[in-house]
Image (cartoon, rainbow, N blue to C red; front, top):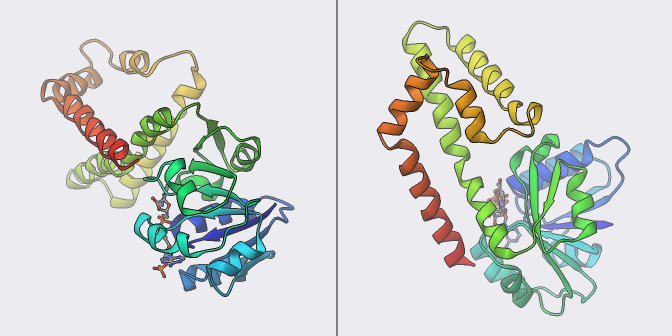
Length: 257
Ligand SMILES: NC(=O)c1ccc[n+]([C@@H]2O[C@H](COP(=O)([O-])OP(=O)(O)OC[C@H]3O[C@@H](n4cnc5c(N)ncnc54)[C@H](OP(=O)(O)O)[C@@H]3O)[C@@H](O)[C@H]2O)c1
């Protein structure tokens, strides 16, 4: 595979870092020159990673191209580029459907949509992709877990889960700042929360047959402190509001695509 990226920002940097820190990895990677600093630092860090003169030079040097620009930039830039029919286009642009991307890339026969997460930099976490494609699945499978989905509506529903990262960290920050306000050393509190939730994150893998509802029940010992927090948050409508937010994101994603 000769891999190219149109758009060298946070996500491209994470994918290239995950790929190029694999032992013995020799895939040729051509980056578009924006962002200049990120592209230059990736090229300096890894062999077989080069920065092209412009977006067209990326296309001319690769057979598989990942689109990693913001949606508005994609609308402006993609129709001006000359794609070959044999290019395999992998769009990472969350808000565009496969059909919309296909319209912007001319004669290209093969378009796949993929949604990785930033932890791909350390080869952890899932990447969903549609339509199922063995080459893209193998690529992302080396960088974490590749999940092929059967329909764009399933892809859109799974995408909603990626809107929850910031709230997750706010949840952890609430615990951390509460600890700090109660005399716990800042670094110690951060380490404690990080280690605690890192370990809890393993629970679904350790007990693969347990649903999340079952795990919540397991940890909410009757009359215990976990049951109290769960009950109070539930009574305040916290989880109902959270679901409403998910509904809102789903509407936004499906309206966009
Ligand atoms: N970050 C994530 O975790 C994530 C996850 C899933 C999907 N996505 C999707 O991936 C895409 C990229 O996200 P990102 O977080 O990597 O965004 P980002 O950090 O803003 O990167 C986008 C890059 O595109 C560059 N760019 C701007 N105009 C360009 C042009 N005309 N030609 C080529 N490159 C150009 C920008 O360069 P300058 O800095 O010079 O403007 C920037 O470095 C988005 O569509 C997003 O929806 C991101």
